[in-house]
Length: 97
Image (tube, rainbow, N blue to C red; front, side, top):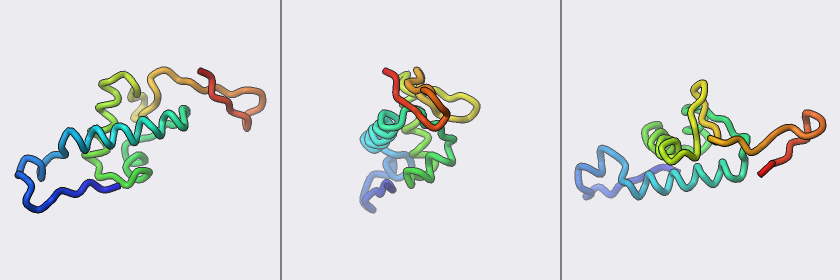
């Protein structure tokens, strides 16, 4: 997903993503972390995974950190309250809620 802005858009939209775009990106990221609670991504990994420009991806991730949904640990974005743990052997993983 690449954010595109109409050529006749105001200059303020051309320099920084709008709140709506950032909210949409945050929703996309939140859905992925809900689907995969053990996800642990650096900013470069996240930009590649979601095909986003670096600034837009960082704004989306930072919004989720500000909301308390994610936290930044060792340069990786992870769920603030981990909801997964190994169960049984190392190959078996189960979501614990």
